[in-house]
Length: 324
Image 1 (tube, rainbow, N blue to C red):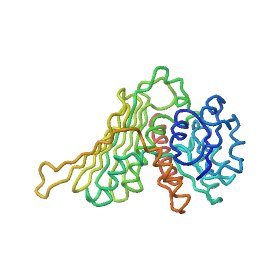
Image 2: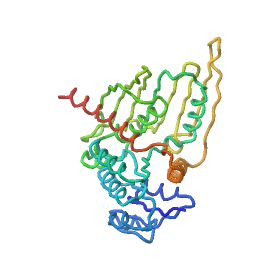
Image 3: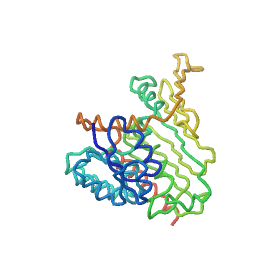
Image 4: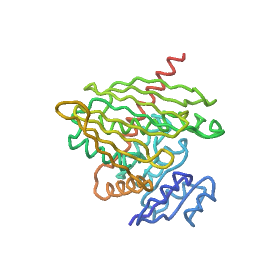
């Protein structure tokens, strides 16, 4: 059993607190003391007190983006295992410092790519790894929501706090999942745009990524989607995997597997619906603990965050050049 501390007790911090299983939450920190006190009697507004506690084994960092890197680095230097929410930093420079600190310490740093642990995506990966769709050709994915009234006044709309807009927010999930199936992308093209929300960061991000083998990913992240949606299609030479929905406002989570027949024509189809509460948070936490106990690499780590951030920054640079 591990002793856990959570820094950042908003929506995501609450999801993490509910996903600990048998492990003990012994300390919390948040800039709003009342929020920290919802989950622990040992609550404070000073996160530095928390990372220095000798009885803390694991630290979960679920703050706004501007504090992710600083707190994660301090926790690493205090010899704590860390789970930091994506994107793990505001930019590549911050993330490099975190990675350098992690290499000096014998701790396991997990990045919160919980979408890898959604059951439809896990099942898709199982079929993919078994050769069920043959060699990968391309990925097509979309992810979006519609914002809220005064969305442009929230922290995500402030580049000094967020580091970027929708491409850095939901877009990194699409990039990470595409890398998980396709491998490394060697060429990156893209554009960001602010179509609707009056803010200094993008509300839409578009990516076209290719691997050294020429496999492609077409990705679109949007916060002017209006109806929340998630869709990911993985096309192989002998079949296709289609994931729709993530539960809740994103709709029932469903995997459809299309298997080509030798004579072509309409494929065989099988589908699975995954009802009930979102268990990805519990599964991701369990994977992190197992990686600590066994010494294996966690599923979604700083290397994955670095790769996703490099793609995001490349597209930001391309967009800046296009607008100059």
